Length: 317
Image 1 (cartoon, rainbow, N blue to C red):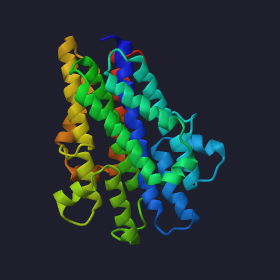
Image 2 (tube, helix red, strand yellow):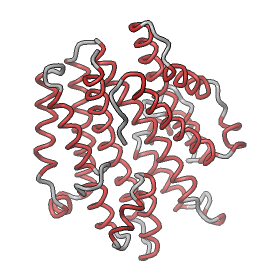
Image 3 (cartoon, one colour):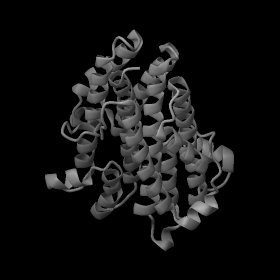
């Protein structure tokens, strides 16, 4: 496949997944903000959303206070912030438009319809429909596009690059979500196990659609170590880091066999997948969860750069 085509398809999928993940980040912050806290408490609950999205410096440059409205406008609607929902959908649509010959008509129509609504979205409209309704709508449109892709696209190289972009972006987002809750929102010792701690961990599980799965698997109160195990090591959880890298490794292995080349990115992905497959949560907590997740995110960035070198024209952000 031409490098330009692979690049467009891969980043089309990453940007759509990024928009969905941004909606999930905002959703968990919004759920937490519904607790009865003061102005300082609201800042504590919304600041992590900026940190996890890598938007804290860009937001600080605006000189605005950290309020629910300001954070939501920045992460959802800011046209100058490249990872906002608006910018991600705009970039996804542009990549989709460039690949209309390679993708199906249903994929294009789904993406274009989503973009037409995002393009005209304002904070007033979000407020009128309710923030959670808007976040759910973004997630549903992402699900629809993925479903249409899976149901209509030929299982060829193009399909593999679409899936590769989806799972790499998802793995990165899950690691960042987990790290922010554990490290940035780490409660005071007296709050551990309390109502606030329980609600925050529950909101995190809901943000990755894993609350019911946690209950089904562990049948116990929500505990940080088990949440971490679920989202890092459980290969049967669709948004876990382990499940994502099982898919990534399979795709890169297939591409390596197709092109008969030993790509460095495929080797790195396989190493990361092995560590996730055979890892133990006790060892991760001994190392330090924050340190483990920071190293994982750095490896994802390294893998993304390797994929760009091996298959594509250039790197994106």
